[in-house]
Amino acid sequence: MRSYAIIGTGALGGFYGAKLQQAGLEVHFLVNSDYEHVKKSGLTIQSKDGDFQLTSVAAYHHSSQMPACDVVIVCLKTTHNHLLAKILPDLLQPSSIVIVLQNGLGTEAEIARSLNPHQQIWGGLCFICSNKIAPGHIHHLDYGEIKLGAYGANYQAVPVTPMMESIAADFRRAGIPVLLSDNLLLARWQKLVWNIPYNGLSVVLNATTDRLMANPATSALVERLMGEVQVAAAAYDCHIADEFIQTMLDYTVKMTPYRTSMKIDYDEGRPLEIGAMFGNPLAFARDRGVDLPSIEMLYRQLQFLAHN
Amino acid sequence: MRSYAIIGTGALGGFYGAKLQQAGLEVHFLVNSDYEHVKKSGLTIQSKDGDFQLTSVAAYHHSSQMPACDVVIVCLKTTHNHLLAKILPDLLQPSSIVIVLQNGLGTEAEIARSLNPHQQIWGGLCFICSNKIAPGHIHHLDYGEIKLGAYGANYQAVPVTPMMESIAADFRRAGIPVLLSDNLLLARWQKLVWNIPYNGLSVVLNATTDRLMANPATSALVERLMGEVQVAAAAYDCHIADEFIQTMLDYTVKMTPYRTSMKIDYDEGRPLEIGAMFGNPLAFARDRGVDLPSIEMLYRQLQFLAHN
Image (cartoon, rainbow over all chains, first blue to last red; front, side):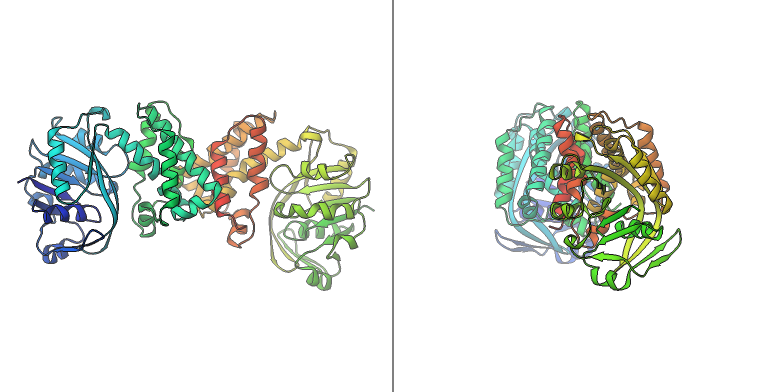
């Protein structure tokens, strides 16, 4: 049986890890602030797919106490990525696979630079609404799919392997839909099409998605920001169709009013994931000589507003 | 003796009009919300140049009751400019001069379109810190200079005339410094170099000037916005030197923390002067095929935040 390590037992890691354990897999949880609670009382999952409780979980406060695992899933916020250089070596054996379930761009490359070049690194994009509402208590509201792709040097496309199929099967058995991609970079740019405008503007303008779309000035601005993501992606041979952008716009108009994850972080006084979500995409674009004036302006506004 | 009409007896019109009357000139004040108070108790000026009181002023609630005057000074906020088409004809004789003391761009041209083509229109830029702190009570904190230029069709440059010198002499006798310019359009673009970044960002980021300048992300953004004003001005053959921009930046860093006029309007729930200060400059630039992405983004953000 494959063993899994969850780095960061919050809204994301707590949910996916609990689902994997409930499906019978071996899961080891690295827990920060909730460690005492989770060690004693386990995890409570309240989910639209069915509530459940894990009264006993393998919880750890320090990665040094954890065993090496077959699959190591990074569920930290990107604002804590500086901790990874210390955590990851404790959990890896040469055949281990690191899966980065984070927003933004560039984390896989950063991790790759710090590890043995043969270590496998995959990236995953999570389409999920999930919140931690109390220590060890996750509320999963909707969705849950993971789009998964292998990281190749410089984000080159990598064909889907049998190992990816096999791990995807573990997730699916646990009730987590997985879509496998041979182009992680395209998947990341595609997710940024939504994340950059809505996360950024929701913080700067103190607004939910519905209000941003209801005002013609801001809906035009959202579209312009999406267009800049499209241009940056194209500079990396990642084709994002105009129809994809239109679908994102239509989808958001139809969504229930939504407070983005960055807005929640901002309202809660937590650090904002602006490096991975704005700084890195801007750096990628700059490397190809592409100027993204609107995204850059939004980034600067967020840097001003960020809690440091 | 020359007669003056003041349209809008607030922080600006109340102050300048009171100074002119105190110097012995004939001044007629059009007063809106403070009419009853000003009619009964006059105007109180609290100024760093010396406090004074005018116990009796010629106050009017409707322009139809006012006499035509030699000089008609428009001191309304630009958000009330739709009222001018009704007010101005009441106050003008063929030789009257209209002086527009407003921020932004384009008001002179709008007024010119509604008047006899031979009516003289001048524009003035006020460098002043002044607030209305109670009905008929103006607090003049600092500065006060007016930069004055005649409006020529399509903002073509117009040489300074003896009449301009003569009216400037009235102002100076009243203790109001006046600088005469033969290039009103350049003067307007120059003032926008300061007004666009600081007014806009102070509202969007809820910040005073000192905080915007203390953060490297926003001070870089201020500089970028100023650069776009410079580009737009250049498209109209108005040369703004890099040194001018540097001077504005340095000057603002040294200033006491300042809450911009647009931020005050925003905090007080009043309409924002975004049409004259953002919409019109953007339209001017567009007419010359110039794209101003950062200013346009700021405008859209302000349109979203504006009280309508």
